[in-house]
Image (cartoon, rainbow, N blue to C red; front, side, top):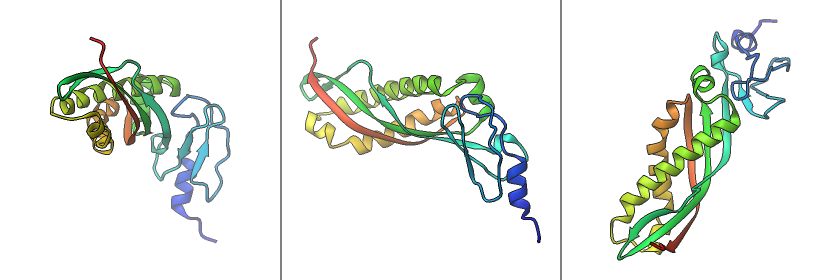
Length: 178
């Protein structure tokens, strides 16, 4: 029986440490496996063909983000404060950079949420400068999510992460008490 070289390479290049938390991976990689689950942090590590442990990828899906403080914008003729929340997904694209800049999954969430909230404030400031109503702003959440993903992706890439998805699930617009 011939040995599938791609499967053999996948087994040889399986990581021994979780790229997300640094925990030791003790799971034995068997033929046909395409991923491992870290027993410490629960991250799913995809096994890919390649000569090094850098060929393993970690996907972190459906993580929550939100603004910690209201964002002040002008909607039409009124100053408004906006809070927002949603979900995001990232993949660790460069384990070495991730370990150096972020370190672990809890720090990742803190950094990523901060970047998303900051970039959303920029986007709301740009959109809010027009004659937009609160209802009109709420109808543009898909557009804003796309802009948010586009503007936050370079910041997260600098941390060894690929931003794969951003959603805005809720916006709350209130009159600003300025």
